[in-house]
Amino acid sequence: AALAAASPTAGPAPAAASAVAGGPAVGPAVDRLVAALTARGTPVSAQRVRLLVARRVADPDELAEAEAAVAAVDEDRAELRLAVKERDDLFATYAVSTWSVQLTRAAARLGLGPSAVTLLSVLLAVGAAVLFAVGGRPALVVGAVLLYLGFVLDCVDGQLARYTRHFSAWGGWLDTMADRAKEYLVYAGLAVGATHAGIRYGWALAIAALTLQTTRHMTDTWYGALHDEAIRRPRPEPAGGRVGVRLDAASTRVQAAPGSPSYWLKRTVVFPIGERWALIALTVALFDQRVALVAVLVWGTLAFAYTAGLRTLRARWLRVSVLETVDATLHRDDGPLAALLPALRRPGPLALAAIGALGAAALLVAALLRLGGGDPGGLRPGVPVALLVLLVGGLGAGAAHRGPLDWLVPAVLRAGEYLFAIAVGVVGGVPPWLLFGYLLVLALHHYDLTARLEKRQAAPPLHRWTGGWEGRSALLALAAIAGATGIGMVTLGAYLLAVFVASVVLAWVVLPARSADRRWG
Image 1 (cartoon, one colour):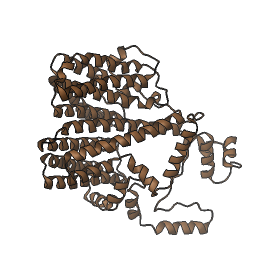
Image 2 (tube, one colour):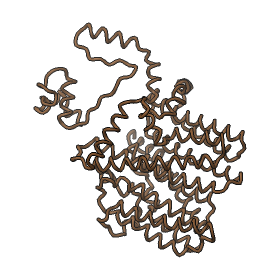
Image 3 (cartoon, one colour):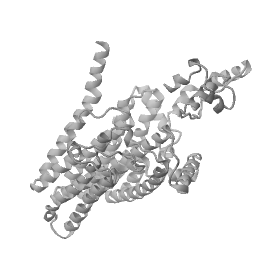
Image 4 (tube, helix red, strand yellow):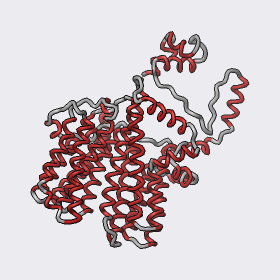
């Protein structure tokens, strides 16, 4: 709409456009169009042209030179190289993209689609998880190789989509969901292998890694949305003083120097998926499953502290809210119980969510301490108390999420629900593998929400049947009070998985088919 309104054919350019352009609104249509867009406040950015040719010509000689330059380009080779991300992470850049384009070309010639390559990468990751569970040095080494190859294919599917121009919302959603499912299945394989090898706390480490990584991803998603929102609309006068200004300037300098040590350090310290898979493959091949899980937890914790700290400072400087631009109830994952709770405007939705998470964390710490020296089942009376504290987070459901840090609310609510489920599981004596499975189902549900947000898709068709974070927590608490925590967790987990699968089928198969029937009927 902005492009149409600013088009030179829509009428004379406004006076503001002349001022922005630095002169009268005359000259080539492209210049007048850019000036008009800028005058209307539309964000305009430049795209660097790689490997191809893009020139402005003013006379026949320049036109002939440009046409000759275009004719000299090997377009297929250029498109294949352009399919590789210009700015990727360190491991992907030097250990994958240097040769993955050959696989991309082969997949295109075989007629494989990006989704088929994604499924192949899932199979390799599952194979790696099975070998990690089997244990033994040969199995661990082969599993590490399969894990690396699975990551290569994970890069190839995106390259193939860009090379063949086969993009779809379904493919993007599948890629996001497959990445998370693969990683957490590998965690499970490491936990099984550690347990069979007689290593203690294998499942506990896997549960901690899943919880940490999911919470991290929630902050990543919403900070990205906040950053996009800051670009889309004018920012008020910056807050945060010199710290925010310096952080923004430093980030801009680093991003403007790709390939520099500071650039690679910043890209690596945040522990992206390539570095996580490389670390797992290396540590499990050289050491064992427990070392791999501990390494993921240690680096993940440091990366979380680094990113959360810097992003919090930058968000306070940006002073832009993002949750008020979307359906906050959906992305908070509130259920009907939260709608019945009174709404508090103060101390704010983030503080209320943090109080609820602290209550769950307190119960978990008490249960773990009791687990080391006695029976944690004696803490069963504390479950309803922790639930009441957790529900404090629901008091912010009806409040405006306009604070500069309210983008953290979904992540804090996820942390509170996961910590409460873990605490209830420990108190109820639930087998750790069952607790991990329940958290895995929860993670799939929450990643479905964030993947749809990133791909600009509608809410899951059956989302209202998931009960919300507070409803699920209340059901687990009732099961714990009744002494049937394990049964309650199995039942609730199976129900959520069925709802998730049904939503996927409805969203990507049934509803698109009905829409097509209506168009052609």
